[in-house]
Amino acid sequence: MAMFLHCIYICTAFFIFSAFTNGEFQVRSSRKLSDDDDMITVDASGHTGFSTIQAAIDSVPSNNQNWISIYVKAGVYNEQVKIPPDKTFIHLRGEGIGKTNVVWGAHDTMLTSATFASMADNIIVSGFTFVNSYNYPPSKNGSPVKPAVAAKISGDKSAFYECSFLGFQDTLLDDAGRHYFKLCNIEGAIDFIFGGGQSIYEVTINLHLAIYLK
Image (cartoon, rainbow, N blue to C red; front, side, top):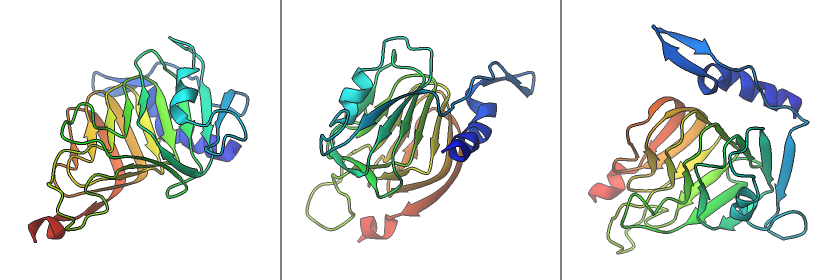
């Protein structure tokens, strides 16, 4: 655990706690995650902690200034998850790609269809798969192709580590702010990464264009 948190800090410290000034990144804070941070547990079975991710996020104090870790156990969470602007300094931690899965099927509009939406600053997300299940998995199922966002990121200073974003049209709305994506997987066919965010991507991209052109 300590090694993992150290890795997250090294990968994101220059980005999450810095600003680009006069051609150089200037560090603003040395705050980092530790094993002693407050932790909330989410378990889909309901055996421990919260049974939904949204309920755990809602429990974080407004205008929080200390890192809070939300540990989400493996499972499929059929819910639309939103981190509002006042829920800052959250580390949302799953058990890995394909293990902790958040699935929703909203579509038609880019602004409200996202399975996962983060509007807060200072957010770290690791070990999740976010799926917009409308038109995914890609197939000729007769459904019309429409905007169906898997994730919408609007807050500043956010980092994603070992996450997967799965969709068909408009998969990842990198809306606004500075973001870092490390060892992530992004799937889509049409505008699958778009928006006005200032982001660094070290990811794998899977295209489904051939299916769309059939």
